[in-house]
Amino acid sequence: MAIVKALCLSLLAATSTLAVPSPPRRGRLSPVVRNGSKLLVDGKEWKAVGPNIYWLGLDENVTPPAGEPFDPSTKASYPTKERVTEAMAVVNALGGTMIRTHTLGVSTGNPLSIWPEQGVVNEEAFDIIDWAVYQAGLYGVRLLVPLVDNYDYYHGGKYNFLRWAGFNLTQAKDSNNPEIQQFYTNTAIVSVFKDYIKTLVTHRNQYNNLTYAEDPTIFAYETGNELLGPVWGDMNCPADWVQDIAAYVKGLAPGKLFFDGTYGINKTHLNIQEVDVYSDHFYPTDNGKLQAGIKAVEDAGKVYFAGEYDWVGRSGGDSLESFFQILENSPAVGGDTFWSFFGRNGPDCDTFVNHSDGFTLQYGNPNNTAYTNSRIQLIRKHFIAMSQGKNIDPKEPLPSVPCPAPSPQKYRKVQ
Ligand SMILES: *[C@@H]1O[C@H](CO)[C@@H](O)[C@H](O)[C@H]1NC(C)=O
Ligand SMILES: *[C@@H]1O[C@H](CO)[C@@H](O)[C@H](O)[C@H]1NC(C)=O
Ligand SMILES: *[C@@H]1O[C@H](CO)[C@@H](O)[C@H](O)[C@H]1NC(C)=O
Ligand SMILES: *[C@@H]1O[C@H](CO)[C@@H](O)[C@H](O)[C@H]1NC(C)=O
Ligand SMILES: *[C@@H]1O[C@H](CO)[C@@H](O)[C@H](O)[C@H]1NC(C)=O
Ligand SMILES: *[C@@H]1O[C@H](CO)[C@@H](O)[C@H](O)[C@H]1NC(C)=O
Image (tube, rainbow, N blue to C red):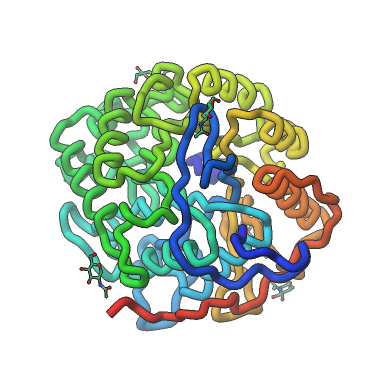
């Protein structure tokens, strides 16, 4: 998500399209592979469609009960396991196949982060991240995980690495300072960033005993979220850095796909061999920018992904229907993720969590207006068209998701 924002399949057959989401599955998911401009699972075309759910590993929107981990200065707290499991059930109900999720990868500089300080590992931070990866796997929902953020938010990003290296920089005062490029160009910082990536990717999940590198639930890593240089929109995330990080991640985790997290389609990056997917974000939806981006990526024989877009329409732009039609009709489009999903405040099933950016999608909230529900129905129709090639009635009622959502092996860790 951008500063200006102040500025997410069940593999078990559903008995009916209106049934509640299928119960969790067992066994590992098949890996996602790329062939030219297509993503494949078990030799069949696969589309990555779902919500952005940035808060799965660390949230900023709920004050937890007294005694639970909480960082008052950033309002950061770990989401409950019920909230995380419900998110997976909602992805199934929406016909989605995956989630793009910042805080399963970007977790630095906050007392509740994986790395509160450089090289210091906070094992407690992994509990909910492990749970999210484990539950996603059980629900057949794959994960796309950015590794760093362009901004200075509660969950961390490039400014943590800059400050640890002695550069006294913040987003608030330095987003246009050329020194921020040191994040990409300073060999000491790049080395520390790789150490962080190693801590993350080699971590062994307490719930399924797989390292994140081994677990096919995480189908892809992304360099980062909306990576830019000192000028807004400059796409100045150096190509050699993208290649270096992509090669490093593929070395640690050979089964994963890799996304270039540069904000926008930088044509000088399209020949990076290690990169599979190029993406762009849309505030507002912009069909011209979408079509130009798809064409450039298709011409390079790679996959295009619309990583974020304003599903509400509050920033204006082209109609969501027309934006979805382009995505559905372009063979090089690997998928898209709307910004952004929030659910019930589980275990409290009566309250929904809200976020202040105005793009909050609350699935199944009885207070949603008819307009809001029609937009959610449109998203579900689009996801089903992308993931199943089916054309459903846009007025088809949204399947209900039970609260709590089913989660059989609740809280049981590998011994
Ligand atoms: C990959 O794509 C090429 C060209 O589109 C096709 O001939 C080939 O059969 C595909 N391979 C797989 C494994 O799908
Ligand atoms: C960092 O910069 C701010 C103002 O830009 C200044 O107030 C602060 O003292 C600096 N901190 C250090 C450690 O240099
Ligand atoms: C977890 O996996 C490791 C590495 O493969 C293995 O040594 C260990 O025995 C496994 N633990 C359990 C409880 O299965
Ligand atoms: C694209 O990437 C190149 C090389 O990484 C960089 O020099 C350039 O500033 C970026 N932006 C544009 C608009 O090409
Ligand atoms: C719906 O709105 C009412 C009135 O504002 C509020 O009291 C209630 O908590 C809301 N319900 C949900 C599920 O958000
Ligand atoms: C959710 O947050 C948005 C943006 O701050 C606000 O406009 C909206 O009224 C909030 N909704 C509820 C139910 O509080």
